Length: 84
Image 1 (cartoon, rainbow, N blue to C red):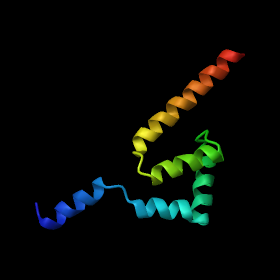
Image 2: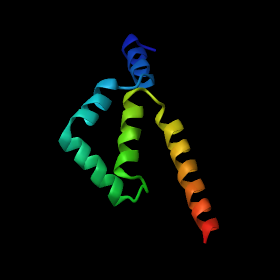
Image 3: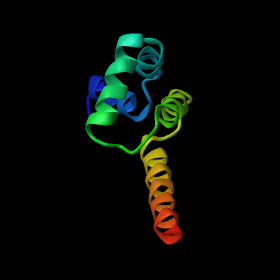
């Protein structure tokens, strides 16, 4: 491999903290993300989505966070179904 392609691979392995920070701090980007969340029916409240954004900004792996959120939402639905 060339030296340039080695650098590109290493960049892909490291989370881009500047992008995450930009999304979290930019009101326009936050509004867009909240809108997309509602549009695709993520089942997340604004507060839950805010927490997810903060966790991503802190470096939590996106796949791991998604797995935990999906598991939590599924358990919440099962619990609600058992209540009726």
